[in-house]
Amino acid sequence: MIKLEQVSKIFYKKKREIQALKDITLHIEKGDIFGIIGYSGSGKSTLVRTINLLERPTSGDIYLQGKNIVSLSEKELIPFRRKIGMIFQHFNLLSSRTVFDNVAFPLQLTNMTKAEINKKVDNLLDMVDLSEKREEYPVALSGGQKQRVAIARALASDPEILLCDEATSALDPQTTRSILSLLKRINRELGITIVLITHQMEVVRAVCNRVAVISAGELVEENEVNVLFEFPKSPITQELLNPTLTID
Ligand SMILES: Nc1ncnc2c1ncn2[C@@H]1O[C@H](COP(=O)(O)OP(=O)(O)OP(=O)(O)O)[C@@H](O)[C@H]1O
Image 1 (cartoon, rainbow, N blue to C red):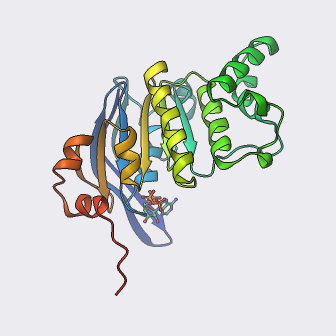
Image 2 (tube, protein in one colour):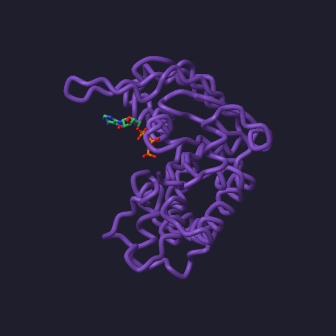
């Protein structure tokens, strides 16, 4: 469903070159909850942003459902981007709009009628268990509730893929569990493929079926989650599994 073939990304900052991704090849199957894990600065965000070409790779190819999208224009990308929803660590809600209007926002840009939008948004709010917060503004919500609104908004366009960029990193463990269980339900019930980036191994263990470990822009290891947890090969994976906070 998603194939990255030898994807590299170089950023140029003043005269300095930053190689954020080096020759990454990854295949994500339909229905996967695919984890991408690595330390801060390893290239996770850049990698996930190449999937919808928010970040264009310097070289390499990206296939969505068999079609190489790297050479498409912004206009040609629209139908592909419509199939991809995204949620973020800091939720990115519109503070001047109510919960209802945040979720309705992507639908108001289509030719759906008001009644169709109302019905769809109410169903989505019901799905994320936020019906009673319909008329609240984001400021009145907890972090977990804000992330539920963001998930409902991402689902409004009926995506086939949901990209999650550190979606639970700003949440406490209990709220993290409830968001992860919602993501699992979305994957199971709606058949949405999920790509989830995180620096927390316990998040990968809780929901993912496959995982890729990246370090300094390189793919160091990839496997089924239970195999990787049982037989971690690379030192980075072993360290991520047994984090210590020892200070010299
Ligand atoms: N727009 C940019 N311009 C220049 N350098 C960038 C840009 N975006 C990312 N980088 C650099 O690319 C490298 C990878 O960054 P990236 O944000 O992908 O890592 P990350 O693993 O997601 O880190 P974090 O978990 O801290 O967000 C870093 O060295 C970063 O400074």
